[in-house]
Image (tube, rainbow, N blue to C red; front, side, top):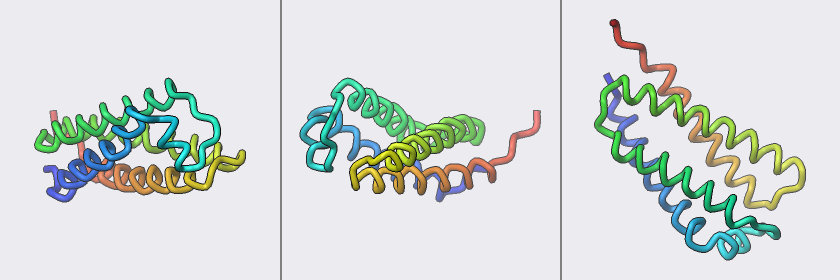
Amino acid sequence: MVPQSLRRWFVVHFIADMLAAIPLFVAPVQVLGWLGWTAVDPISTRLVAAALFGIGIESYLGRNASADAFRAMLNLKVIWSATAAIGVLWSQLEGGPMAGWGVFGIFAVFHVAWLRYRLGLRPTSA
């Protein structure tokens, strides 16, 4: 059984990912410049935006899926959010822009939410 709250979290995740992905994809240098990034690689930024599009849109498309599908999607979200949070934290400790702390916080909060739900979804009996 998939909790209704998890289904709602998937819609929230879709909205958050689209709010970040669209501007990063369309105007990476300008958007990150406003946030304090002094050196921006548009290709890398658009690759991050593409990952946000993929994960976010799948969150929306899969919001009514089975528990097995949610388990697989949550595995991806746990891995992505953990490695993203660690990578951003590492970069912040090396002197990243102040806005990077906000990015770290967003990924950390989503990681805790996804991990909590993933641990709560029990495998179905075969």
